[in-house]
Image 1 (cartoon, rainbow, N blue to C red):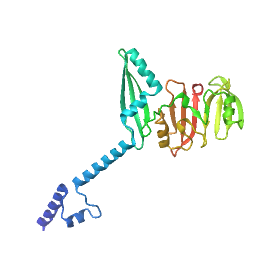
Image 2: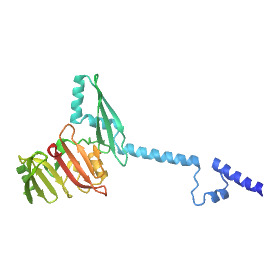
Image 3: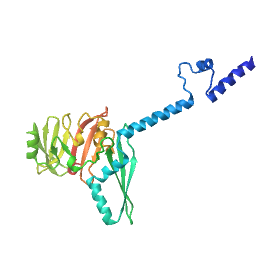
Image 4: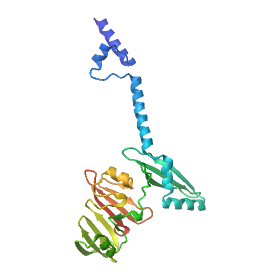
Length: 266
């Protein structure tokens, strides 16, 4: 009896190691599990991965186009010209490839100097459209209202506010005016120039088309990833400018407030 038991154990162990069983033994061990020989299963997995790669290749622009899009950004284009005059070296590299969760090419631009530490900046390109996702000062507009506009121009664009008040601000050491509209608030400095706009309801299109109710995936597709990401706040900083875009995020990972702000109130 002992010899028979040992024989059965040896057969089962051999089957585990080789992947081969007689059909009755296979049914006992792997009852309810589809039988796929290991070599074919690996082939199917590889085929699946290859298929996904081909789909992404068709869906996303190539890396070369992403780098070209970055080179066409005005700030980078100017850097290229200055670099040629100064004799510095510019290196463009792909830092991160796109995926379904984050369809963004992340391009690293490094300027190497002969006498000091290199400087590196990162730029994002929408992998599906090929659009460079650099938030510029001219993009900081919410429903036609931008930073630096006068109050009269805002009234022409949005009409008369529902409420308005003026209040001294100890931080900026001046009196600020706030006009409120349904779902939107506009703040002016002492000269009645816009220094902040905040939209808290749907229907107010912000930079890149982002608006209240957008998911994180919507944000990434429209603006790329933010330079600063906290649990409830994403912050986009305009390159070499003293102004920012803030997106308040709720527990459901959706935008609740879109705010553009000048350096005065940052």
